Each structure stands twice: as structure tokens, then as C-alpha cells.
Image 1: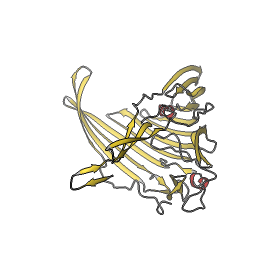
Image 2: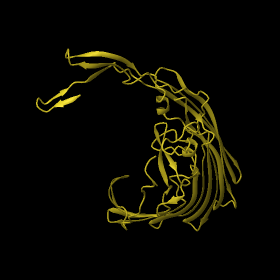
Image 3: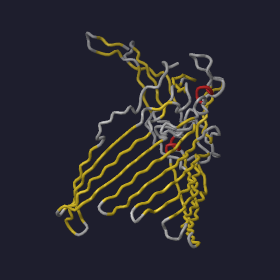
Length: 388
């Protein structure tokens, strides 16, 4: 309660005696089976497959948290246009399920950690601690949704490849990817009681579209090189960060307003302006790579270099809003409506290898990064005003 500067002693106040901690361990299993068949129809080559995944998980007291079996169809083809192997059309479709990380099952732990203790307050008259109360916070009370389905993406690709001469090739590839059954939590506040449940949130969206052009020179005459350009766009409103499973979508959409403004609902904060370009979108991405390798005496010297130019990361104006005692981010402008400057990089490496015995070699390598010492702004404050 206090510190006596004369006696250099602290005045005792309270003691909490915790119950011995009990182990809290969730368990999960993933079983997978993949079947593939390769079929040739002259100049047409087809791969047809299906992947079966079963994932289950239980909490620390053995309650089932997740148990689903899913089937993922896959098909791809390649067609040799002229029968020479120099002009190819290829494409494919695949469904890819995302397994739930084990931390999801951990979130339903029923055994409290440092949540049970006896509270004692110091009695100056007796010089002892008197029992006050027994506290039992209990375990996690989040309800289990056994109807929860794993998230998945549907991927479509179509490409054309052309060989030029003996060592060069060019390819053009288009990709479309859409995520489905995205998992998020829905938080509500009813009569002062907070509740949370994990669902396949209908309002969550994420998709990718990309076009890639590649010029490739295979290793011949001591050198190789590659140049690529990708035009793409990743957009949506569901982009968990920092290893999180859920976002703010679906949190307190009704019955709650910002205490400071009094006019903003949870829907306006957590849903408004959230659809747009993803935080990691790079609309334009140019990459170049080259290497020259030459024997010099007993060693082989290789000089390599990479360079790139890509769009800056997107951002938006935003501010912090407090809803139901928790801080949330309101997007004042549409997600990804602004971008940081374009980013340029140029790196190089020099390596020397010496064969010491048959196919065993020793090497030494030196690398240099950002040769032009380019200082591009990659991030910054995007807040428009203090938190509300």
C-alpha cells in the first residue's frame, strides 16, 4: 500500500494464492489421400486427380472442436500445338483447402490457466493476511460450431509457351483465384453480455487475378537469364494479420455505438470501406535475374545479379474507434486507396567453387544488397486523427 522511506519497507496489501496449474493441451489430426491419373491423347496430356483430407481437433478436455472430411478435385492439361514441343497451351483447375492451425483448438481451452486463486488482504491489527474470497474464472466459454467448414480456394490457370531458338522461351500465364467459406468470428453485445462464435462469414471476400509474362534463357554458353512482368490485383475485405484467424468483420454490427462519437455503429467501423486492394497487393512487379559462370583455373567463378521494380504497398486513411471497450480500426477511405512509392532493388553475388573430390565442391560466396542505396518509403502513419 505504501513505501516507508525511513524504514525502507513496503506496507503489505494483498496476497493471491493460485491453484497449481493444470496442463492444457489440445489435440488434432490430419489424414490425407491423393489419387492421380495421367492420360495421353496424342499431343494432349491430361492429369486428373482428387485429394481427400480429414481433419479433426479437440480441446484440452477432449471435446470435439472441429471434424470435417473434404474432397479437392484437380485437373490440368498441356497441348502440343504443332507436335514439335515448341508451342504449348496449358491450363488447369484445382481446389485447395486450408487446414485450421492448432491454435484454433487451443482457443477453446476449458482448463483455466492462472484463473483460480484465493484472495487474502493484510490485517494491520494482527499482522496477518485474512481470507477474502475464492476466485474461479473458469475456462473459455466460446461455443463450438460443429458446422464450421474449412476455407478453400478455387484456382484457374491458362498459359501459352513458345520456344525461340535453342535456348530462349517466352510464356504468358493467366491466373484467377477465389477464396470461399472464409472463417471469422462474430461478436455481439446484448444487454451488456458479450458473446463470440466462429462461423463461415458470408460477408468475407478475397480473390486474386494475375497475368504473368516470362522471358527465359536457359543456361548455355556459360550464362542464363530470366525476365518477368506480373500484372495482378488482390482484393477483398478479409485479410487476417499476425497469424490471426479472424478479422474485425462481423464484430458488434448492431446495438453498439462509439462512445466518443455516438453516431458510428459497429457496422460502419468494421464493415465500411473494408473492401478494396489487399495490404500486400503489388499491381506491377518486374523481376530480372542473370548469371555468368566461367572456369578459372581449378575454380568456377559465377557472377549473378537480380533487380526488380514493383508497385508500392497500398494503404488507406484510418483511425482508432473504441467499441464495447475494444479498440477497432475504422477506414476513413476505401481499403488500399493510396500507395507508397514504387520500390526498386538491385542485388548481386559473386561465388567461387572448387571441386575437391569427384562431385564434392567447396565454395565461398559474397553478396551485396541494394547496390544503388535506394531509400524508398515502405510504411508510415496513416491515421487521420487521434483515437476515438
